[in-house]
Image 1 (spheres, helix red, strand yellow):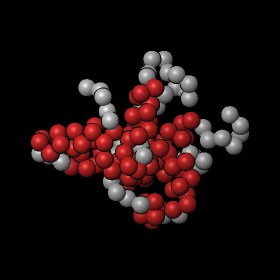
Image 2 (cartoon, helix red, strand yellow; image 1 turned 120 degrees about the vertical axis):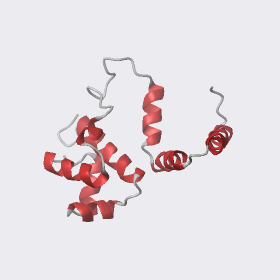
Image 3 (cartoon, one colour; image 1 turned 90 degrees about the horizontal axis):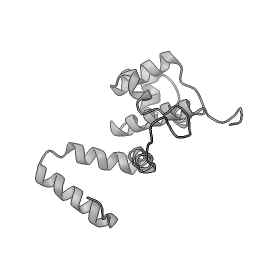
Length: 134
């Protein structure tokens, strides 16, 4: 890691900010406005290139409606493998859920309360992805 590379914790926190912001359907501009900062600063936080101070993280948590701990959930010890044998599949799933499309799919699924419609959504996704799993 060079001096200019974002720290893995800063990247993780930024990813969690981005994921939550997208989950609640908020733009970077709106989050910046509510925090009194520019959307460019929000971008830098989300990339991990700028560190989020404790007080700013507290503000972000309040605006996004989560506890501060949310931003540290699922944090590994470092970029390498953790003390527990996590599969690459788990990392791929987490990455997919943090993408804009993954967040949108998760939002649609979570807002669907009819069990039959949920099953249809799941079957459609499996069919479109040629998924052969359980």
